[in-house]
Length: 270
Image (cartoon, rainbow, N blue to C red):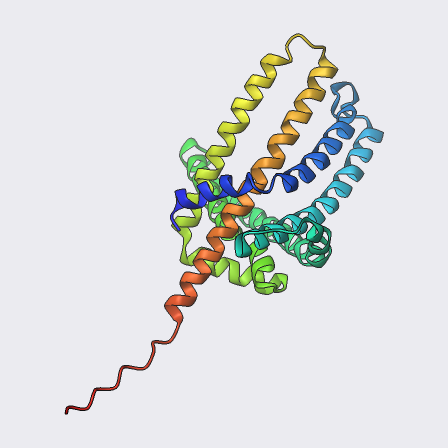
């Protein structure tokens, strides 16, 4: 599948999974409205508010892992069979919960390790001289490493669902698939990122204009609801696009590695 084919499929199939989008929308609206008072500038620096925000962030993160497992399972069914059973959402959420959570924790450890290495590298380069040239080199290195890491770590979560394997094997398989198809994976990510940014900017601009007549609190509440809608739709598009691409690349790899059939025996001459 080409990049644009994958992106198109992401949008087309998402229109058939709006009930899944609705689940994320409800979750994001609740999260946004609960967080609304906590993000008020008046509460900035309040230790109690900071503590509550941290606890809520952890709760929302753990709940999101469950929702992600459920959504990915439904997406897999949709792509493999052309149909889905929403009653399986909770089943998939429970089934893949610990595996996805473990993978995300591994991502955090990898990110911390990379940040530490980049910090050491940056400090070492700056010892040679703190100037614009060296700072530019450091910025380029950080950008390249960040892009490479994002691209390499896209597929493992899809490997867990599609291949029904553990997080360690999924990490290995996902990185291998990404390395073998780095340009296509990066290209798909860039196109989806641009599309999501355009959608967010257009919706945010129109919403901002529409909420001008309202007060600050009402405007923030409306923006939270609209943002929840965008943040519920775009992730499903990306899930479908990247899972489609992963399945396509896996199928292509399997086909290329399949042993050739026996050569046709020569026919006896009459």
